[in-house]
Amino acid sequence: MFCRIIDNFGDIGVSWRLCQQLATEHGFVVTLWVDDWRAAMRFLDPLLGSEPDIASQALQLQGVCIRHWPEDEQSCVEAAQAAVIVEMFGCELPETTLRSMAAQQPHPCWINLEYLSAEHWVAELHGLPSPQTIQGADQTVTLQKQFFLPGFTDNTGGLLRERPLITQHQTWQNEQDVLRDKLSNAYGLDSTPPLWLSLFCYSGNSLANLVEALIQDAEPAVCIIPTGKLANQLASELGLSSEPAPGECLSHGNIQFIVHPFVSQADYDRLLSICDINIVRGEDSFVRAQWAGKPLLWHIYPQDDGVHLDKLQAFQSLYAGEAGPAKSGAEAAALACWQALNFRWNCGDGIENLWHDLRPHLPALHSHARNWQQKLAELPDLTSSLVRATGFAT
Image 1 (cartoon, one colour):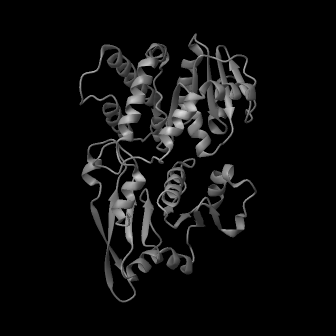
Image 2 (cartoon, helix red, strand yellow; image 1 turned 30 degrees about the vertical axis):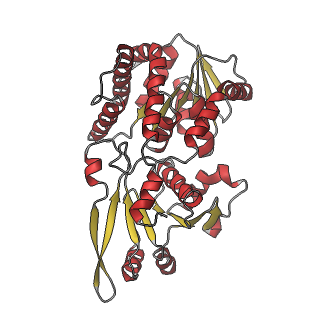
Image 3 (cartoon, one colour; image 1 turned 60 degrees about the vertical axis):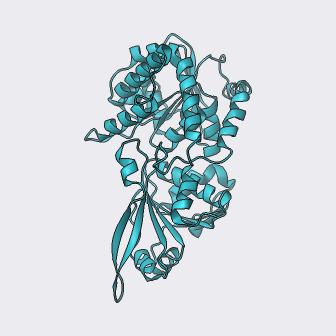
């Protein structure tokens, strides 16, 4: 599997979950090639337990071999020896690797795993071949690259979902009060508020608008925000001059902001599970929030041409079940408020009134989120679908 690490670990986050599941649940020997070794070590730091050997350029962790992106010819040839090669998110493979793949008999199964979208064209493209002409040393060879697209329906590749995930969320939520008390004690909260939020979005106007909406809300809440750029902007929005440290609690009116340290993916899943609403971004946290079965707001990656808003609308329509049976009055009102808030927030607009209006709808949104979780759980998971697509399913 080849992955370029960009955008605050989003791509490697998906790649690492997929690699782990291929190794632990399907028994594959998996090598993950990454282009930015230092970034990979920062991402894996919560799992390592000790200072990694940066110079080694190779690491064995939880059944997966992590290697630095092949730059020398020997590594490029070695990478091509796999029976299956997965190109994550359209990253381009090294030319030497491609020529080595062309020289193999039989050729490796070559998969291009794309980004997640709810748009209608996903099902049309999923599984289609993409012939690639490779110029070898003495002949031209055509390799078949296959498109593999994640999605929310049974005619796509599905979503990443480990076998015990739904049961794990049920366990966490049964222990929700205990887990919240532990966090409250660890961060020295003044009191245990009735509303818990996790916040992981892109910095900029959207964060400023959300913080303003939270501050103006009369109801007390705790908001858990990751250390780094978001926490630094939050401190600026609150008029603080210093960067907040991991573990610090910033209070403003009825809102207590917890600056949370960088944690493993499993710990992040648990955090999503015990919050009342999860504000997420990109792809990995977006999918994991849906598995938590709690209401969510999605900060989609912004694009200059506004294409991201079309993608947002496609997901909102699917999530709200606009093409399905009519909703009850309470559920329909809740989903209408949720869609308006999520869309306006992604447009960079102020959302104070919409946030205030959303609060009474949270019980109905929670019920809808649980139903959505169960609906998705009935579909094949992405990793199993990928294994079947390669022809190596047992």
